[in-house]
Length: 248
Image (cartoon, rainbow, N blue to C red; front, side):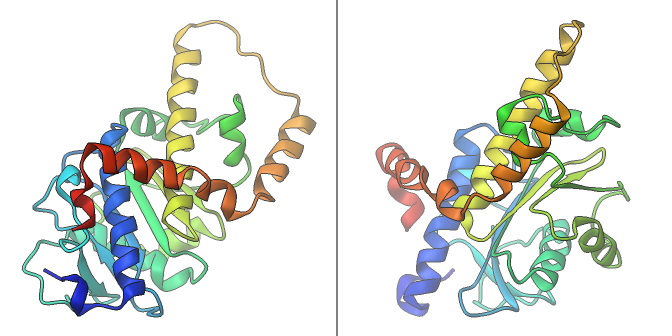
């Protein structure tokens, strides 16, 4: 278990933000017990990233409990925690291939799993969904992601996008930092939930004009990271009121 004196100030800040992200994913009901994972690249180290100890629920994650590993899965900080093999396979693939991505977030939410089983994917029906219209990739289900050979196919399918629907599995978002990956996942999951509610009515869907859908999608694509950062301070204040132990 790392402590603040053992790592750089930049790494500690990354640990605090990642621990906060785990707590927020729990707070907003996007966990699957210990079955999913979020990672962040160690600042200044292209070949190292931080991941959770799979012995802990997300609500128990702290900055010091996070495990530092390299792209080969070697534990670098002396931690005795458990690294989820699927987490290592999925996240090491993206961190190795996408140097513009510092944070990767994967979930098994009910709305996300449901949409991942639909051939239509996530439809451009709502404003939140335009963050993903024409900018979401798809990856075929190959079983539990413990085969390291799958990494090449996963990153090829992801391409340059920041969002991925894992068919019959769940959702994945990437970010240039932790706030961006979290914001995208929050909006993607919310869009999936709204789509399922709309479809469940059995009523005819009112579709957005394709030209407007395209223009809105491109507008969303042009937004800078600060848009996703904007709420992060508020999220941290919320966590501080509930339980500030994520900083430990």
